[in-house]
Length: 497
Image (cartoon, rainbow, N blue to C red):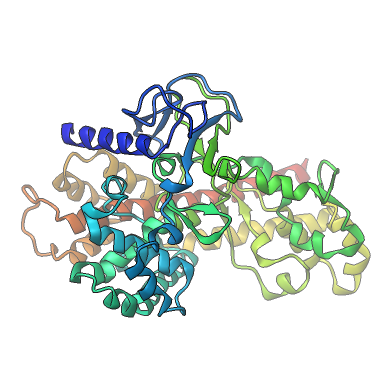
């Protein structure tokens, strides 16, 4: 711990020398101290229940106040790394690679230079491993249980392998040492780029931002859900200029306001006038609070795919259920808009699509304006679709290998077991014991006589961490379905009164 603290202090001193600063003065103006780039607004702290290591407020911060500047010189980009002529020459001979693939190679190139890299103090503080879906093994992938999640995981793994094979010739031209040529090294660098890069206007691959990537994630709030059915609205020329954003509240909004909505989803950006990446407080923070950064709207599955974590409470999470082909063909809504919200309520578009689907085809045109305003068509129509929705959610839950109760017990065992022996002993009493045996088999421990003194390998510990993430994700998925069933029951009860 003492060595880790010394490394952190050295990193923050290095960052200060590059002009990175949380001071309210300009980054290019003299600072009161170059011993650390932090201390005026922020400090590195540990938040065990909300992201681990992150940035905390050292004083009260006002919403919109600048809290960190990172000069362009300090950013790791394709442009800055390719100032190395050897790298630039090699990359130019492999023009078929994407900008992201090239940035991944650039990161590995700097890692291979190690202490001779000008970013060495920063590289030392990058995580040694990640939990993005591309790093899931077969066991962890199947632990997600839901076909959609397993398919997304498989696609992420295949994409990473394909991009690695495509970039292999470039890495060989650069004479990478064997450890930097492996898929393991590639997927680590790919995960670093996926989870830590920030947007810059001149390069779609983004940049790595020392100190700036210490901010943990804060999801945008409920306000974003109001535009869930823009796909239909923007394609309807009769309501292009003025659109309905909430059928229940009948709120009319000018279409030009949409751009300002998307801009509110980020809390920083590169600013040409100061030639630096600038970060702003997205809320009022008290001294000691964690200062968070919102870098987009993501479901928990997307957070796992790109960043390797999920949120306990994610207002942007959503669940897709199987729908009959006729549901899709009866409406102009995109498939991505037909989902169930994190709280169990069906999306505006899903309700509208179901109402149209339950209407005879020859009558759909005459009731379309009612459906797209969010109105119920009739009691019979509403009861029919609510019953269908409830029945579908129940069927999905029954077809999954474990229940909400079983997953809850398994997670409790993971959280509360003092050692692996205790965990194995507890799970033997649960209906999820078959999953435990599959884990043991995956790590060649199935025939072990006693787990009393066993020490899990590093690989097995990482697998346990990802297994836990998979169980957390599938449990949240099931709870959304359960909440939808409760929502449907409440609606049906209201018709009985």
